[in-house]
Image 1 (spheres, one colour):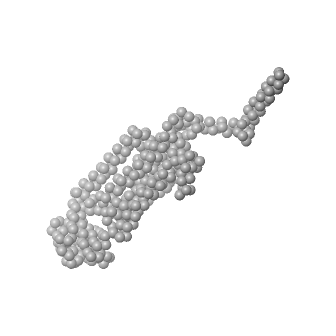
Image 2 (cartoon, helix red, strand yellow):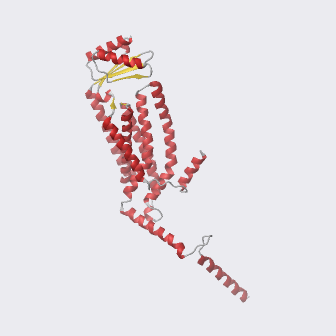
Image 3 (cartoon, one colour):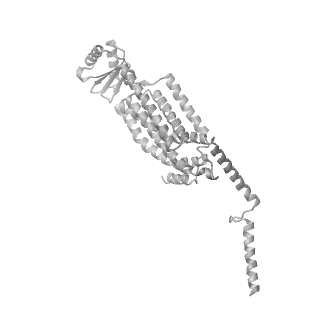
Length: 362
């Protein structure tokens, strides 16, 4: 812990520096690989949409103990009733959830009676949920609308509070987070439910929060940078990243641990359910969001700023200043004490001469 604290202090004071912005091509390559894999997974495996989005019927049968044999039994019961099961899973260790395509009320009642007979329970014990395709389509539209409104408000806020290049960098990072998280969702086969959508919007807020903290430090470090010639915009932004690096890592670890525990406990003890849908979205999103806020958003910002005339002029002044600083020791040799040989000898000789003249005068 002490070493991490020392590292954080060194990064904040600039004694230790990680060239994050300068190595942006490496981060871009990593992100590109993850995005390509995510899109490829979506194209091959696609998302496992819940009935809330695609419509259908869901039957939840309570049992004393539900296991793999219960899943097989439920599947056979649905097929025997003349229906096709879309998904049969165990929830919480004591329930079997059966999902089918959309059913009429008569077909739903018939299937519910068949399941009650197969599992020796009453029909009133079976929880039935019917979702029409129209309602599912409406949920999908509302989710997409909420995402678009969120992104527009984010762009407006960042453009006003900071500047438009920072808004672009933040939006690129958010798109990066959504694509990778959705790709991992498709790979895992977890069902996409309204809780998953809530999780997506939550992680976007978390990622944005982390990005805004970094951008606020960048804004502080670059406040009067164009009036001087000590550092370029990218160098000042890289210092801001180093100064907020340990804070971002610590915050992410503290946030990820409880989400990870929910995910592990939910999968191992409770089975697939709403809690797991939300936990997976939060865990993946927080992890990817921390990465994007440090290694995507700020490098994209610097890439835009470096092309602006003011930043180009600043870079030339910084280069000229450093070139002069390098040439100075060659023309004026410097002693170990840091005082040039000319200035060190001159004043001492003058002092000796004045002392001698005073003594001769007395």
